Length: 226
Image (cartoon, rainbow, N blue to C red; front, top):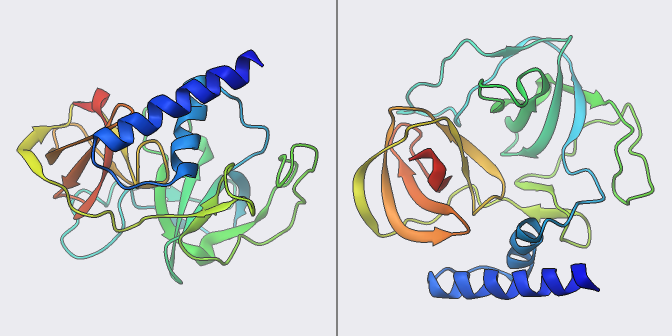
């Protein structure tokens, strides 16, 4: 009961912050943010591990014309394990590179879909008591990643975040961080120290909406990186 009360209060705080910031969001998004704030532990795995089929380059930001700082000599090989997060389109997937998790190196990045092998298996998904099987190919759905909130355990990725009102067009990034589609949601890119971004007046749960010229993308960055 105490946990439920804590979660309910956190949801109220989250919804108030969303409305005050003039953001359009869904109840599930507010609930997910509030669950994190309340310290509620997820009982299913959202990032499942996969083998790697072949050596491939990985890029910290979506590869397209005008993107800077993307060739950092980052590769995955057949001895590596990656976490599948979502497919951007028929060519690219967002993955996490297990060898760099919890290190100072960027570990979320974009890789060709055909580089991803099959599931390692064993994680609790899609239910707290089930175990994901080994040997399954990565999902084929596009711009949808696993979620603890949606009924089918998948939710849409907002890969093209809408523009915001810029109040500082030369805000300096002081530490490496991820670029998200919403506050603490899906990773859609990365920012690096000494980069400058266009900062808006939109804030949510310690995150701020920005435009990243080097990545050619709008998104959300934690305030702690400024």
